Image (cartoon, rainbow, N blue to C red; front, side, top):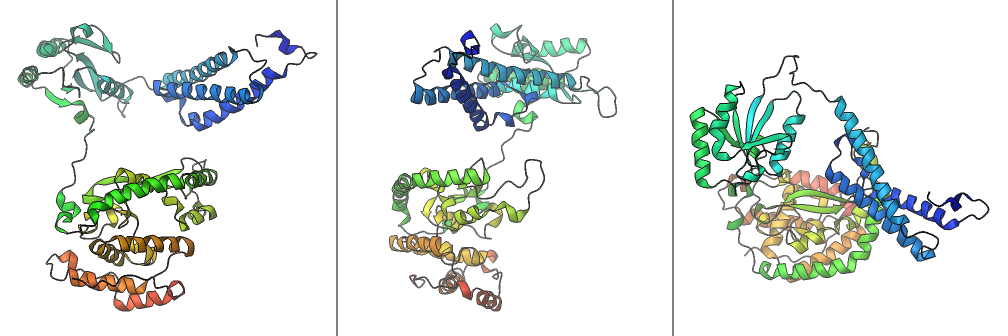
Length: 490
């Protein structure tokens, strides 16, 4: 734009036009990669501005790297990439700010309720100035009809008195809360609540007691901001909810097993990294971003963790918001990835950080836990396990639980090696029902827990013996007997 030679068709300079073409392509890729189009302009924020600047910087760097590799940037002034990055960032930010301003003008201005009457909001004074308090004030401003109004803020730092936080004036210190409440009441503004900021370092115990005394004398309630907005963490699960994991004795083999898992998973992660990259690329082409899928599962001692997999299902809705047919969500590529267990590769991360083990009972969703989850929650869940190589999805939940508990009680290095070999066979040939292993695990489970008085352990199986026989006759085509150690109950 600044070089008039670019308009001279007689002496056509190719380098600037090459840079324009490459930089435009890189900018489009970075906008898609940073998913800037997912952000709505009317809710543009500082965080979005950082994302725009990051995308612009990556676009400039990638375009310069490509051209430098082929042309050494000959014919392109060195200031051009800097100017390009600044113009790109400024234009995208300006467009978003204009969209935000346009939508802000369309927001309702009044504090009227649904019936058109003037609302009577609760008045609040915020004690303590921090970022969370600022966000809380902004939330109350955007609520329509307005049900809460922040009338003032107090802070113990005298340098902040007279300034504003999110448009609300800081009118004094915490010790002045009584006179400030009275002053507002004189003008007809009655304070209903005091919100305490989450940062309590500015409130020593004696000042907090003084605030409570002054508010109690005036009948004004005191709550924390997180309590007022109902940002309260759920209480931890009681030990009774996770079963009697501590009462189930596990073999000594599980003590060194954690070290074996960490070393083996680290080695497998390095070896399978090229394969994981290829799978991730195929998943991106098949189902799009994001390529990872996660679910919250229950692990050892009832601790919750996020289990990761490669995505194999397409989104339940298309680009227009219409529900996608269920039979079309899993593609042929997704079926292959699931059948070969390649979607489980990200779980090596779960093993390295200690959430899972390479071999153990598969982690279940909370609603899929057995009536007595204590035995299976006494160890770390596994990427593969005894139940997976002896039936997988062809066995009932009760049979799967019996297989998993049998493994926990008889775990050893030899049995783990058998499971590794069996897992490779399942990945190559598909799931097969090992009827002998299932029957043996069920008989052992019933004998092991027959003397326990807990009703949940004496519950009937989901299927009767006749139903099991009929179901297994239908599965004769996929029946195979894997070798396994028939260890009798001790």
